[in-house]
Length: 188
Image (spheres, rainbow, N blue to C red):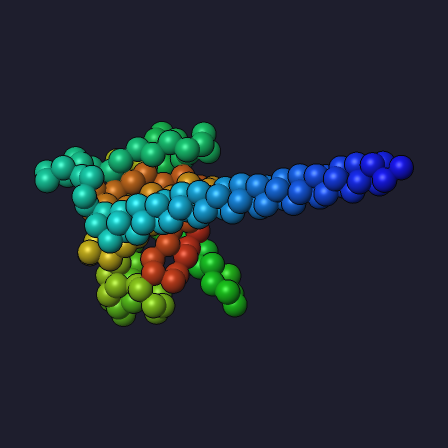
C-alpha cells in the first residue's frame, strides 16, 4: 500500500523534472537562435556601413566607362523613347510635402543644396552640388558629382551611384542625405 503512493510520487517528480529540463532546453534554443539572427544582422549592417563609408572599394581604379545598366524590373525607359520632347518630373518625397518639379530632358539637371543648382534641396547630408541627371544618348541617367553619397532605390533594392552614373527607370527614387526624390520621364 505504501509502495503505490511512493511510485506515484516518483513518477510525478520525474515528470516535473522532465518538463523543467525541456523548458530550459527550449529557452536555450530560442536564445541561441535569437543570438544567431542578431549576429547575422550585425554582420550585414557592418558590411553595409563599410560599403557606404567606402563606396569605391569594389570599383577598379579606372572606373566604369559611362553609366551602369542596373536591371531590377522591366519598367525601364526604353532607349528609343527618350528625346528632346521629353520632360523630367522630380517629386520631392519629404515628410511634410510632395513638391513636383518639371525640367526639360535635353539639358543636364544638377541637384544639391547650393543656390546655383536647378533643383535646390536644403537638407542634412545634401552636398553643395550633389548629383546630376542627364540624358546619356537617349536614356536618362543619374551620376554623383562629389564625394557625397547618392543612392538609387528601385523597389526594395538600392545601389550607390558612382561618378560614372546609372540609368534611370520611371519610379526610381534617388536618396541624397536625408532627402529623397522620385524620378519620372514624361512626354512633353
